[in-house]
Length: 320
Figure 1 (cartoon, helix red, strand yellow):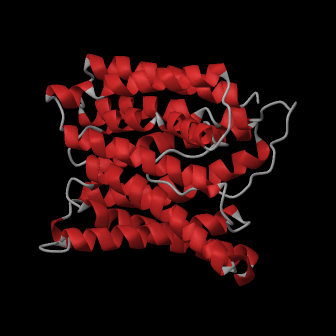
Figure 2: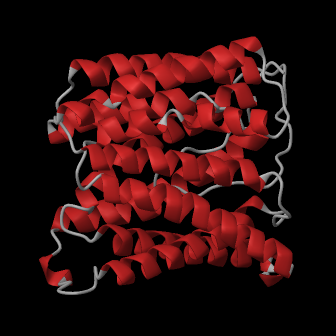
């Protein structure tokens, strides 16, 4: 990805503080491949989990529940393992973490959850895969000069994004849902880009906990403004939606993030970043197999183009 191994907008926690360089020149161990498999499959499956959760759950309130629960659990784990002092941050760091949490989890994930009430999970994942292109454009706007290969990857990604909007323009899916995801990718990209410019908590786990809690509170407020609490009957929520909710909290946020954070410290970033173009493929396959989502030619072609563009961006940026 354009920014150092930044996650894409899905139901997951984020790590936005400076990372340590991964060791190089070592043989990739089985533990690394195992952790990478978790990130590939679990993060790729969160799109399916969201789609199932919102079948009978209100989008923003369900997102609020996931993020606040996961954030509090993560904060508890940090306090248990490292003591309460590990959660201490300055006001500036707390404000920065809250802002990033709102951009990533309310603007990014929140709009994705709302979009998945009307468009397929596989299409959502492919639209989100273009995030690295937006981050490169933001970096260019700030004065950086991306390489010709990176620019080529951005252009390829944008072409793929254009092809992916065809189902919305043709009426095969709701155009509003497609536009929501595009807006979510912009919000996520701004949050990812801004995180490197702000004073963030030094511990990535602590930062992620505060981000999730702030983002969850933001989703809660939006859900209440939308009136999602009116007529809400928890007894009417299906068992499969509850299971999806639990899966997103435990596996999508906590398990996969732990694997991801460990990978950042033990594996080459170029290898870790490959999740950016593997996750959409996993999401499309699961959406098709589990939910029977149609794979139209614009989705297949546009998805392939986006993955090629992201692959080019990731491989080029990791050499710089």
